[in-house]
Amino acid sequence: MAREDIPPLEWALDKETETEVGKSIADAYRRSVTTAEKAIQWYQLAKKAKRFPSNLLRILAITAGIVGGLAPVIAGFGGLAFLGVTISKDFVAQEGYLLIAIAAGLLLADRYTGLSSGWIRYVITQTQIQSLLADFQFEWAELLDEARAQQPNTAAKLKMQQRARAFNASALNLVSEETKAWAAEFQSNIADLQAMLMKQRDEAKAASDVRQTKAEEAKAASDAAAKAGSLNVLATSAEKIVSGTVKLGRNGPELELKDGSRAFDVVEPGRHTVALAVKFANATAQYEEVVKIEAGELVTFKHEFPKPA
Image 1 (cartoon, rainbow, N blue to C red):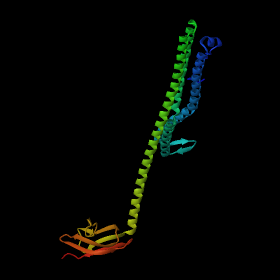
Image 2: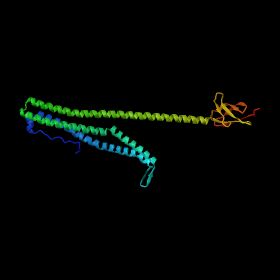
Image 3: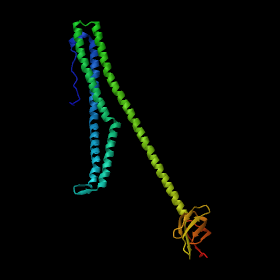
Image 4: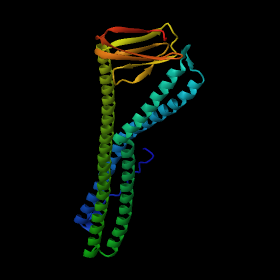
C-alpha cells in the first residue's frame, strides 16, 4: 500500500439493521458508500498511472540541470578526461547548455501534460473523499443508535435519508471540483502552449525575414558589383604635389588624393567627369576630363600636371 493510500472502513449493513431502518434507508446508505468507494478506487488507480512518469521527468530534469550547471565549472578547469579520452572545454561547455535546455524541456513536458499537477490533485481528492466517507460512516453509526432508541419513526428515517443524500452530494462535489480544476488547467496549458508556439513562430518569421533581407541586400550588392566597373585615378607632375582632391561626376563628393591617387572600386557603367584639383608649394591646378566606364572594366585615368611656371 502506498503511503498516501488510506484503506476504507468496512462497515456493512446486516439484515437486522436493514430491518430496523427499512430497505430504502439501507439502499440509500449502500448507494452513497458505493459511489464514494468507486471514486476512491478510480483516483487510486489514476494517481498510480501519473506517479511514475511524473517522478521520472522530475528526476531527469533535476539531474540534467545539475550536470548542465556543473559543465561550465568543469570547462573552467580545462576540459575533462574520461577513459583515456580528453574532452575539450568548449565541448563540455556546449553540452552543459544542451543539458540545461533538456532539463527545461522536461519541466515543460511535465507542465503541459499535467503529470505532477494531476497526480497531486488525485492524491488530494482521494484523501478528501476517504475522510468524508469515514466521517459519514461514524455519523451513520450514531444515527443508527438514535434510530434504535426511538423505535425507528418517520423523523429518524428522514434524518438518515437526508444525511445519506448530503454525503453523496459532498462526494460528487469533490469529484466535480477536481474535474473542473483539471479542465481549467488543461485549457490554460493549451492556451500557454499555443501562445508560446505563436511567439516562436513570430520570432522565427522575424529572423527569417532578417536573413532574407540581408540575402537580398547581399545579392543586390553582388549584382551591382558585377555590373559595375572600377576606376583608378592618378595625378602626377614634375613638381611635387602637396595635396589634391578628385571628384567623380559633377555632383560627387570631393575625395582626398593619397600619394596622388584614388581608387573607385564600384562605378556605374557610363560616362563620368573626373575633376582633379592639386596644390603645389606656390600654385594650384585643376583638370577635368570625361571617361567612359564599361561593366566589369577597370579603367586607369592618369593625368600629368605641367610644372608650375
